[in-house]
Image (cartoon, rainbow, N blue to C red; front, top):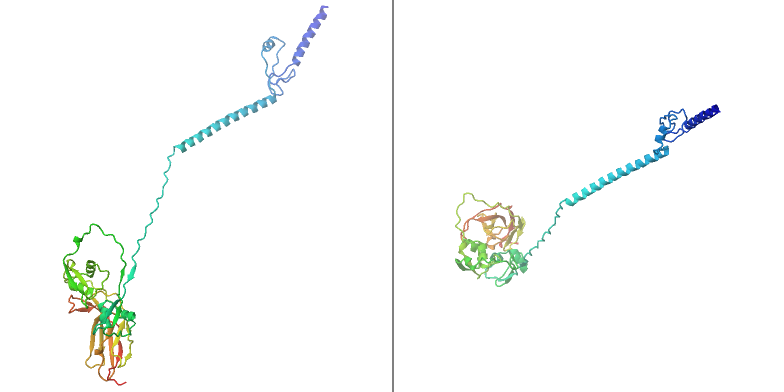
Length: 391
């Protein structure tokens, strides 16, 4: 009886140990292991086999045992990675927002640039120029012995202008008592208002004056030369708009502006010499019959001459044995050869004529002294017959 009970007790102990070994599992992943396994086949954790003692198992049985399988570990790793990504994104966004705030602060702290405002340039208004109004012709009654040249010199105009205005012939034939319309050579501007400074008073007007009455042979240039006063001063003192004077006109000569007596200068500056005038009429070789009592010589102007400059006309009779010649000084570009120079014998004569410019070098109108002021023209000749030549 006792042996049977002992055998039963031993078998029971052996069965408990066997059943305990069969129930061995991995402490990490919970995989069941064989009795002789030394390492977990799933997670590779070493396995330690404990004996049948119950003390250690009794001690471990009080704490909960946490085991994770492979899917749980993967999920846990993914969650960890997602958490790290969220943290990194938050850090980056915070840095970007900080940079944007710094840029806004920098822009707000910049000094605004001043805007340049363009000022409109004022438009200049042109001052209206005075309107030039021609002076009307002056009526003149031809006196005894007057010719067109004398009338032209009296009014400071040209013979050609008188011929055109009165529709006369080429020789400008006039008779005593004939009324001619003499055109004036200059133009005067219409009066325009001018600002007169208040500082100018009448006390500055010249008081040392010489009253004169213009004669028939006077011109403004001859009056100015006679009293050594410039034409400009005479015109301004008398309120004249041009340099034309008429017989019987009353003038005042401002002696305050009298020029000093001219003396010799060490370095005289001569006016550049003028070229020889171009002769126009008569053409070279022209023939004038005995019926032509006068011959008109015409030439082209070379320049606007000064008041002390004149054209010198030299006429020579080449056929005459006594070498007759004639020298005249005129301001016009025309000269009428008088009938007194016409030949008086019974043969035609060859007449030669030239024109040059001369300058007056003294202040004596009664005895002027001339000097050459330019070249002489090319000579021309024409044939002039006397009344004694039978046609």
